[in-house]
Length: 501
Image 1: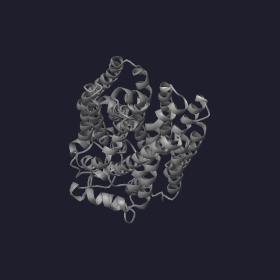
Image 2: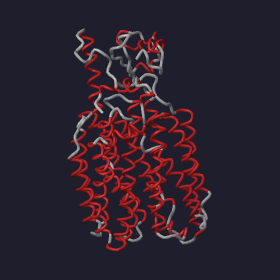
Image 3: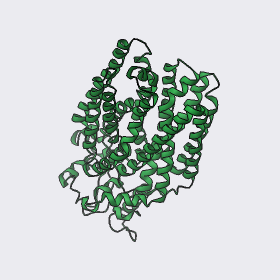
């Protein structure tokens, strides 16, 4: 810690004022706002102490991230949920509108590699600035696209949004690790994913309300422009907030694992070597494929939801949006519950497998009840499906970080999301074609088969929790040093090399 370039000895002394709040007069110490959550953990180095610190502003960081993730995710589904209306306005077929969703998936695949490198090399703030700037630009391009002959312009704006998403999807686990304590990283990751899910939920709910299915094209253009202006205004405000408020990392790391991560010299890190190590990590690669199958199914269901509902319940565009909202809101609840559960129990493998299995069961029930002519049944089954399928998202992120520590969180998350985008495109096109030729039931059974395969693969993942081992190793060193009896093999500070890769 004494060699850490992120802060000098004077800064350490200032923070060590917080060591014992019960014995220190708050009026004579550091700022009260920062005292409240200050902890200090002794470690083995030349000064015999190292400090971990939880800053209240970590909640501001995760809120800002959730906000711009929300704004971007809203745009992903805003075309698909009123598929038939945009088909009529721009004079294009349903497949063209499907691509307004699938371009988010396609763009991610080639661009995730340079973006992951940037995240590892340049950190969170640059990625946040680029994400919000590109997202803001895309929303204003869409404002200029509200003419019937300008479909290519609205596609350009959607491409900008899809490029922004590449800078967003890999951040929740990295943000949680950099800013949050070991007992709250899963909850923080869930909150980060929560913003994305909330954006999708609003994307399901709001467009059918703002853009009614009217025949007057001038009136329709007016309603579309209102939706685009609202989105652009929100994106602009969020961009300004990120510029002035989003910070790279806390001055002092929140966990011993982060202390170790910061102690690694930059020259020892190789992005390509990290990728190769991940590709040789069998448990992680099983998770990559199973995660892709689950999230790819979610993308397909979300993109094609309007078509599936309208086929069985004509004229129910607004209710199609509400069903989509139900899926995502239930998933948000599932995400938060799963995140809190992981922080309490650390049962990553068991929880991931249970949620995956229930996603499969939920998809089967949804497939068999969609055509019963009872819309309330669809709401119930969709909610159950969303609770588990969308609730799985943060589980995959956090399980990946555990399996791959000390590799960069952005790299592991990038591989997970890349798999999800690939399967999302395959499943969306495949299910769309099956629906066109054989109906919605066959299309949903198609997804059920792959969810069953993913469940089986998840069962074979070895639960090698490397991040937990890193924390335990550091804690054992602390206990050994405090007892005055350094254990064999623990007489030196723990480093990343102590964690088997």
